[in-house]
Image (tube, rainbow, N blue to C red; front, top):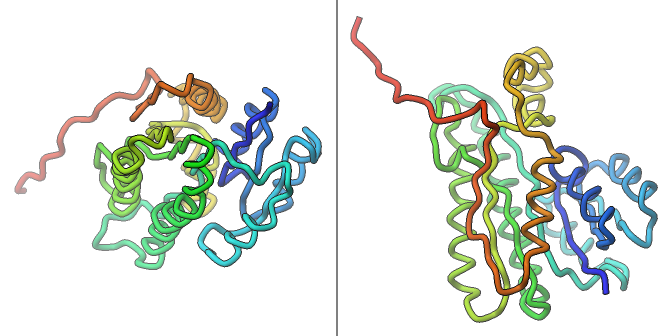
Length: 250
């Protein structure tokens, strides 16, 4: 019997790659995202019996709940939730940051993730399923301009550990996946579409790809039910830890 995975943020990057990996392996996939026109090609690629597109903004709890209630019978029993939807906005230091961007990151990376998890917990407990939350190395290692983005990802990591504690004895597995540099649309979104900034960041670095992360997600979801990966941190070989910064008097 095939299992069902619900993947948020499936319109690009990690999410779209994960849809391809899971659907290609025979899973049923609920692919969610704001941009329905980007979800439809996933349905076309694998067929409506394999991929169901649910277009909604994760920041809209009413739309989220409606989409879950409208899942077709073949997709309604979710075995694995992959909370992938998230974003970074802006690179300015906190004292010059845009408060509206901070709020958008909190609404998307924290509130929406917690809301969807809460809605699906009863079903996941019933099916002894799994929750895979996409965090980031930014939640562990601060850097200038990371401020609220790093804070939201630290929440995701800690929330994952808290879920593990609360769900003890239910059979539900919970994992925090914490990637480093990966070349997707991430930097384009963060910089408001600055292709040059994206190219400069990744040039010569051999960053991870969306497919690398999708393969990791699939591996975690496919482990035997008695095994739990609590946290997994991934970086390209070219990336490692930076030194401390020191502000010196002139």
